[in-house]
Amino acid sequence: MTVNITSIKTSSDGAWKGDNPLNYAFPLLILQTTFVLFITRFLSLLLKPLRQPKVIAEILGGILLGPSALGRNKEFMQVLFPSWSTPILESVANVGLLFFLFLVGLELDLATIRRSGKRAFSIALAGISLPFLFGAAFSLLLRKVINGEDRVEYGQYIIFIGISFSITAFPVLACILAELKLINTQVGQTAMAAAAFNDVAAWILLALAVALAETSTETHQSSKLISVWVLISGVGFLVFMVVVVRQVMKWVARHCSNINTYIWVSLGGVMLSGFMTELIGIHAIFGGFVFGLSIPKDDGDLAEKVRERIEDLVSCLLLPLYFASSGLKTDVTKIQGAAAWGLLVMMIVTVSVGKIFGTFMAALLCKIPPRDSLALGVLMNTKGLVELIVLNIGKEKKAKMS
Image 1 (cartoon, rainbow, N blue to C red):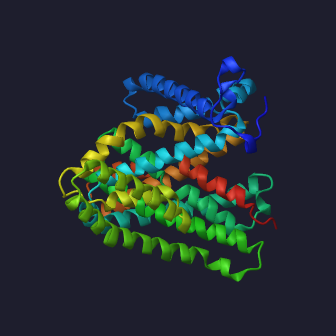
Image 2: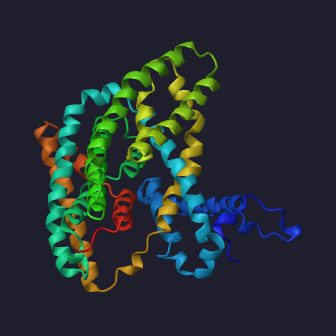
Image 3: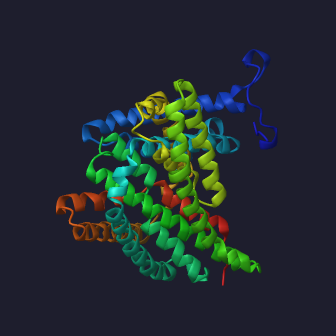
């Protein structure tokens, strides 16, 4: 049965009245969530002897559900993951991601990040610059060997490829550090701070690429300033959160005797912060993360109580949906032939060498021990679905063909 997205209904009247619950949004979402949880939990148990964090099972589970494996069965996709349900699943998944990044920010101590800020900034700068240069060089090869690539305007093309090479998968890194209980170690905090600097710079570059794509097809000169406005607005938002919102949350913590009221204010602040960063042009997850950082950690145990109330719901129920929704859009079977696989291996090696070596050298210059420097390089090389977001944005913008 084909369902028109404009006529989607939330719940059915039940099978006894002739309704198929799978044609309605809420019961289908329940079944999708149950199936995703079963698959990811099963894979997690299989990978446990290999000491792999749960997030690896969630990523593999998402790919397994997509067109790379189970999704090749059209009937399976039509029944369990019809196209009309995709926006609903992705919306719920992104809410989970938003709150997970809030929990990460809630667990991090802003004072500790401030102490390692200069070091983290230097590591992030090297960790994004060298891979970006490698990506720019590799794009020359791609334009020659991939049919049609040479018709894309080079300025936009080099930025999109460079960003996809240099960006760190911040949500995946956060998942791994949280799973391995490393998030409050020196290496973990430096990696998170550097990844935050790295990804903010990458989103600003992405805004520049989008501006270039738009100005190549539009006559409005004002669109050239989009990236500048994103930068100014992002800095203003960060300052406002750290200076104003942090003081407001301190006042609420000291004058609020009801923990439920404090939790209500916190959850509302996460949603509003995510909306504000989306309004600016930066991904909503950074709004949630910055709001988590803004909550004071030294006013009793309120922050810990907030974390305890929502952590299991977010990490065990909502977060797997994010990886599943992204895996549904990933088809690795499109890589065919020895040449394509060889190019893929070459790309992976180039990305990894640039990221790990750049971070490693910068960490050594910051007087971090070699073993910890190498660990930082590997952590900063965490790749995942953020790169797919960048490339999908580039695809959607339909860069001007020369």
